[in-house]
Length: 376
Image 1 (spheres, rainbow, N blue to C red):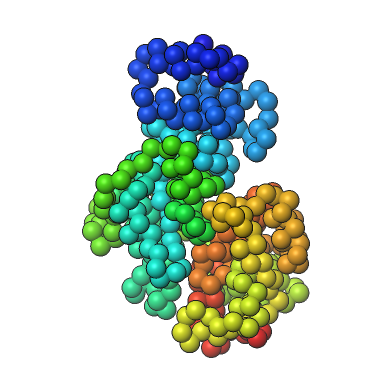
Image 2: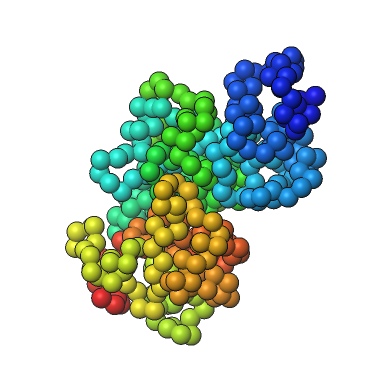
């Protein structure tokens, strides 16, 4: 009856839902919101608990549904998921929301915003600066480098995240850097099919009546963690990342290289026409690299969303990059954050993610090393 009402728009939809046993009123409101803004198929899957294979008889207009999940997670399929799809999946025990907000501007701080609230109800905060490689293991002092395996595992335990959870990464309004959190989670061992990036900000979630917490909350900190403890979460050493020696080999090989470098910085920085934001940093770019500014890959009206695949392909073509090249693509940027935006866009264009890597140190490392070649 629920599915019939959802499918045919019965005027008694609310009454039927209310008469169901054990209906949680928060979930009820979410389902009704989803009914108004997304496909009945996703809502029906959420309401019935059936797998996607049982309800997705027709292809989605955005992406195909996956039957790999053991719970009602048909709305969460693929890297990018809409706010409506996230609303449909909210409340499932196997779904965790992760605030991955990070800001370059000094007047915005993701951790402070999270702790002050509001935030998606039950969401945790992942700090890419805090959960990273620091100290003696990072002698160059490079920002937000991928974390050591044990730190990441202990952090996941502190966040109450298991390897089986589906993770939805989201950001606050105007945050265009959440792809770094996405790739950190995936690169450190979380199943690629279980990490998703919400298209739309916390503000849109609130506008669409998504549940929120307003009370102050404390985000986890690495200094409070016992790294000697045996973690439940099973992490692995960072994957899909390359170091400066690998990139130097590609640059020196020139046309004979088995890889190309795509730089996500703005055109003015790439051409050394604008100064680098870090003091003492040389301007310019790596010889032979291509420039695809990350901002060209995002919705100009809402940078928490990517453009569609055709627009993304056009942006890469404009930058001289063949998304289907057989060569490996090394994504670089200022400090390894927006390089992840390029990597995500390449996947949305259909590129095999195993053929794309991220230069973790990026220009923060390359531009500060007086021995690396640059074009300025």
